[in-house]
Image 1 (cartoon, rainbow, N blue to C red):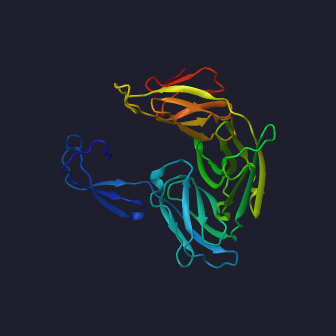
Image 2 (image 1 turned 30 degrees about the horizontal axis):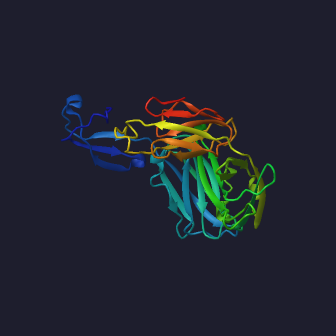
Image 3 (image 1 turned 60 degrees about the vertical axis):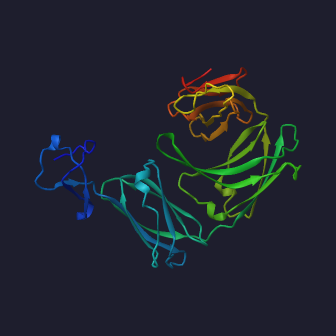
Length: 342
């Protein structure tokens, strides 16, 4: 029989849930007696067969690696599938991860002293078991990062903040992003426009389909986004790079609050501010990076770091259809109540 799990009430008989592999998991659920009638014996629900990922982790000599951490990235973005999926290998380098659904995953494997490993796994059918023997290579060296920033005239740009985004493309245009290798130049101490940082070798995981982007940000200049080949970073002790920053167009405007997200105040002296998250609308194959800004008390804002292009407001309204275009000469009004930009 089928059970409508959306119509459960108190005072219920016991349900016996038969899990995959004849594993019985008992739980008490309330049942809508008006729909099902009086039950004299347990109701049996058979769950879909689970998938499993099993194998061993060894070094290049074949020695088992104990304590290696396996961590999943679900390319279909089902967080509930990953609640208990992270695990460590045992003393023999073995791992066994079950309770997985059909779909695509990337598994990262990390262990001290070894180069991170990534495996793309696709479970095509229910109950599928994928076995893999993973060999970890030696960890690449840490990379000293040296970034030099200039404007179009060649003058140094001080006070930049830079980092590297490692991007995993997912389904439906979604992106999973890991940021590392922060670089910063302090204007009071550095007049050369140089920014320095350290990129840990363990962060340079050669993941399937991963792409690496240098991000350079400074108020008054358009955020610089540049794809960096992994070969430029991997196995290097130092990475030096120079970027040219363009002066950004300035956007000014005002945010009208929404009663669902920010209070509409009746007292003019009671000031509020809003935090908005935006995402670049990128052509196919380019990085649709995200950014955000907070208004001044009262809702006024000034944005002076966005490159020319089109942006979508992601938060606080997930169904916000209007787009923000740069450049835009006239003052903007972002109406969170109406969901419009004018």
